[in-house]
Amino acid sequence: MSPEPNRTLSPTDTDWWRNAVFYQIYIRSFADGNGDGVGDLAGIRSRLPHLADLGVDALWITPFYPSPMADHGYDVADPRDVEPVFGDLAEFDALLAEAHALGIRVTVDLVPNHSSHDHEWFQAALAAGPGSPERARYLFRDGRGPDGSEPPNNWPSVFGGPAWTRVPDGQWYLHIFAPEQPDLNFGNPEVVADLEETMRFWLDRGVDGFRIDVAHGMAKPDGLPDMVPMDDTGLLDDHGPGDHRFDQDGVHVVHRRIRAVIDEYPGTMAVGEVWVSDDERLAQYLREDELQLAFNFKLLTAEWTPDGLRDAITHSLAAVEGTPAPACWVLSNHDRPRHVTRYGGGALGTRRARAAALLQLALPGAAYLYNGDELGMPDVDLPDHVLQDPMWFRSGGTERGRDACRIPVPWSGTEPSYGFSSGADTWLPMPDGWASLTAEAQRTEDGSMLSLYRAALELRASSPVFAGESVQWLQAPDGCVAFRRPGGLVCLVNLSGAPVPVPEGRVLLGSAPVDDGTVPDDTAVWLHA
Ligand code: BGC
Image: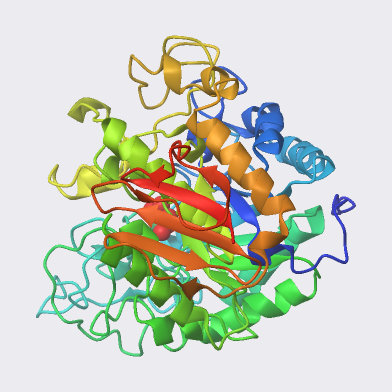
């Protein structure tokens, strides 16, 4: 029996997600409540006051379900329970109730494209043999070549190597990611029904929505034809038309089923991880009976140049135009280098990251922050022997993978683990020299990244200047990006290499001081004009 839902937030505010600021919690790295060096649900509970004080509207918690952790939880062995390393269902219910009491909504990750190889379905499929209904929940095929010893097609795995693994009876199964993540067969009604059951399981507990992993995956073309050969794929690269692993038309059938369940629970939502760069193809995921939001990764992949930023914004807005959806902005997540590092690292990267934060939060639509963005966390160069990402192993050590952007969050104190855990050891090591990066150190410092984020989120939540979902580009000095929102917010970002005059209007916030009448290089300013 499901517990009573915990939702205490306004039930009439069903569109809350349209301009919400979401905060991504990569659970292993956010806060450790039991001292084992791995973040968990208890840790999140203990840090809810930080999140309330920061002013975020909603959380996205990455997978915390039972998992052998071949891909740190994105290999789900049971989507309707909690991995003991992270806590249990009672702990989750308590977290949900406490977050709601603080006015923070909670969304969780849904991983439909694949299960773990430890999922009971996959174990049954291995045992049952070729042609069985158990195998029909996954994508098992005979191999090519006279003795079937070659993979059924030429698809590469996103993590390196072929997307097929052979089992002892000679058949092969498809795994777009690691071999421990067999792809499910969405042509099988049982698979869709099971996804719906998982959604209801969490919605009945009171969650406010889902982030859908690999939302452009799931459907595979009939006959699983060879794809246009590509060099060894980078992680989640931009999958264009010749890449049959992703963005197949059949995926929209699945999204309609997902949306139908969402619509049974007013006020809930789904955001898709859709790595589709074509604006029109992306828009298809946002039709009125599909996803409410789709991450637009153009800001996350844009160069720090005026053209790069303008182009990212233009395309992101074009993709949602004509759909019911607002744009959805992302600067960093657990799969890509953090933006402080992308923008040059050190003081330069931090300065640009401050400006980027004001840019992201000035744009109309929803915004996703990644845990640690608010502290200005950079990536960390890790030695080979501590790397854990399956990419590192699958690529034979040629791709370092994503561990560098997954370092635990520093909370307090002057040495590792900076309040993340009760002990010094953490699942990925934390570097020396982070004393000034901690939330504790930044909380009372006026010029800190944390203070900037708090001020920006407070303004965004309270000021009418943020009204309206369009942007009007403004004339600005060369090397600057400037736009106005219908409510009167003007945002200017200076990337010109030299100071420019502060535009007309009342200054609301700057990513660096602008009191001398100029906006320094690599600085953003918000004005009411
Ligand atoms: C997640 C990754 C994960 C992959 C496979 C992604 O897009 O964000 O972290 O490795 O899906 O589930």
